[in-house]
Image (cartoon, rainbow, N blue to C red):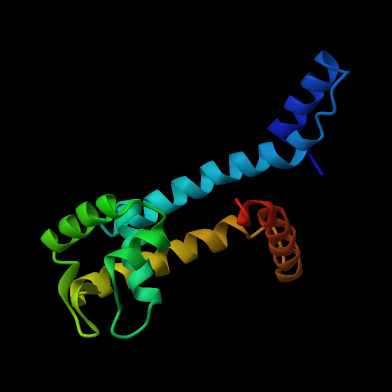
Amino acid sequence: MQGDDVDAIVAAWSRERPDLDVQPLEVLSRLTRLARHLDHARAEAFDTHDLDGWEFDVLAALRRAGEPFALSPGQLATQTMVTSGTMTNRVDRLTERGLVARSPDPHDRRGVRVQLTDQGLFAIDGAFTDLLKREHTLLEALDVTERRELAQLLRRLMEEFRTQ
């Protein structure tokens, strides 16, 4: 197998700082570079459907909720890891674009539900389909078994952050 840019970086650091164990670069520098490629692919998929990344995140959270594709603003904030103030602004902007609508919460007279509109459902389904095509392309070098193994290894690495 031919070396890549990370191999050159690791070799240079090993030469310049033989006193340090630079082995983490072998994995984490590649993850960083892959993340940049993924960010680019995601941005292209979202742009094709006239969505920003944050818009995709909110619409995707609503879509994953299942029929009737509605959540409270608090649930959306939690799922997209933003503050309630940020979510209020985002829902306002998505409402202006006709992608979501607010309605009273049928289970809480003081509550509000945010729901996908037909236009929002069309946008998220198209963007998600396009995103998956691009992500499949990014993973073409690995067979199904290797993808599962990689997912398991990454899951193990993520466990440390679950408690933080």
